[in-house]
Amino acid sequence: MSEAATETPITFTESCCVKVKDLIAEENNPDLKLRVFVTGGGCSGFQYGFTFDEIVNDDDFQVEKDGLTFLVDPMSYQYLVGAEIDYTESCMARNL
Image (cartoon, rainbow, N blue to C red; front, side, top):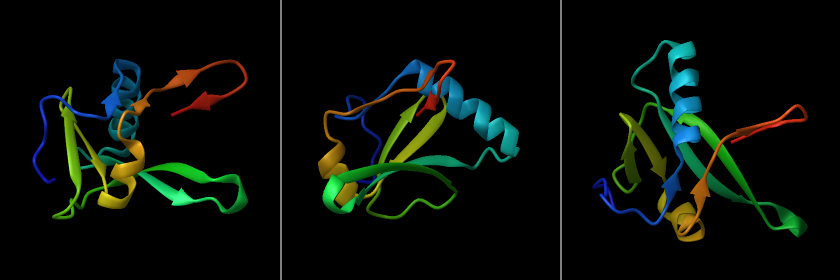
């Protein structure tokens, strides 16, 4: 799963890429990659999370888009197939 795919079962929107680029620029670290993950959420089901990471694990699924690298661990990958990762902003909240 370590190879970047041309067609990927996880989609990262243009809006998401723009926001991630802005956040990486703020950190002044071009080696950062966005890691998307799923954790158990107790009685409410799964929780989805995002963090920046410089380390790529051998078994990470990688998606490259617009000069960015997105990482998903194997356990999370199975739950994220078919997902679209987007960024929206409104007067009430910001969501990635």
